[in-house]
Image (cartoon, rainbow, N blue to C red; front, top):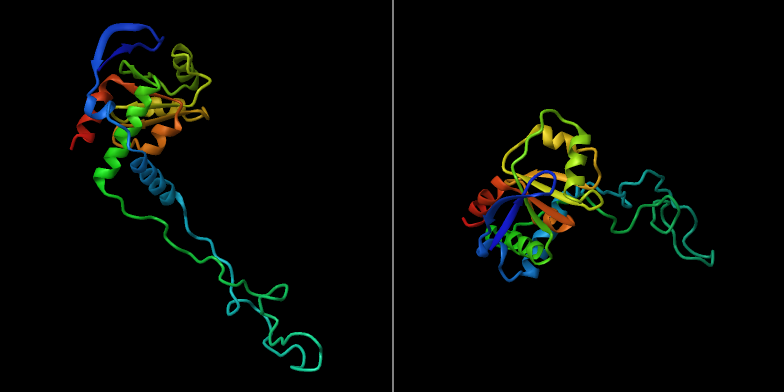
Length: 209
């Protein structure tokens, strides 16, 4: 499969890049995508939630009323979950939500996400770019040239580029990552995927291992 390479103004450069069918044209596996996205979101959770249970609440353990003759239920402590200010029954405790996922499954999920982007015509190949200085106005001009200013975009760079990253940081719908850091969640969360010309071969190398 061939895709035209465009410049920063959205114009065809006359060059074409060959996309591997094994990466960009497979039959998407929805379950692999589900597992990879689930793991990514689970890893974002801090797991520091905590509520005090009966044995952790501060309060008197003095019996608050006599056992019998009141017409009500027995009550032995103010720390009972039945009373206001008492402990919580089976409250949340700190835990780690992360889980293991095989490398092959993660690769299949990213290939599936990329194939979905190609099917939806939501993938563009941009010539390699570099900014002289970090300016949001410059990155916004790039998005305007690509007619993507109103869409949620993901730009994948072949290597770290501080000026490009800093230029996009203040734009809520724009995200910039490197080939080594891109994941399935980011691919699917973006309305349009923009790959730099040098990112294509590196991405194919990573996903072919």
